[in-house]
Length: 224
Image (cartoon, rainbow, N blue to C red; front, side, top):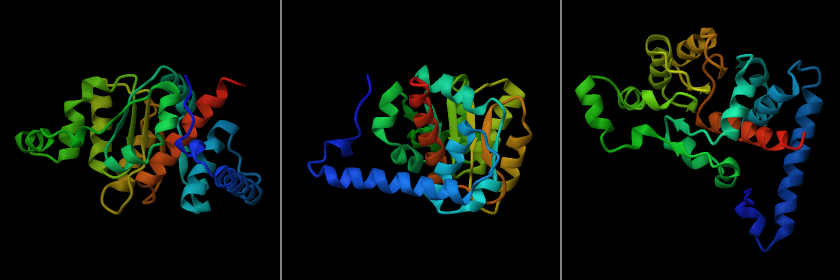
């Protein structure tokens, strides 16, 4: 069952309509400015929403897709895959009504009270320890890393050394220490469907934008 956005229940529908019109106009302007971008429609849907979220056209040069990324995401989301995130920012940033379309639940392992104990026992960061703890659960699910390069490197290790196979890894940590390196490592891992942003740019808001675009694409796929 599909659920309406909470905003659609607002008793001031003019504001809702205005918001949708602003988004459509923003997308139209991005399409016009980025004419000839070269992305196929499914990938451009993602890149355009990232640009819309950040106001930064440079992302069109930085977003990288594994050939099976969008197809694998669509199948996983339709099947109700869980979304494992490295930060609460991603968890709270995802629209509840979009998640309700296919019953996708968000899990943020580092928020588990035991995560600090796991980190101390393993002598590593909480992000690494948390993802290591849930590694066996990641097969066929979606992983979204927007902040912690160490979490992304652990997911890559789980895939390479333990054969863990998420349906999709969104790896877009932002920053100066290991961020670019972790994303380049993901980009080179051709056995794992992934979407990344090469270089230092990224962040939790970018991860949310990518997930929203994928959820929207999956929903409209039913009508295509």
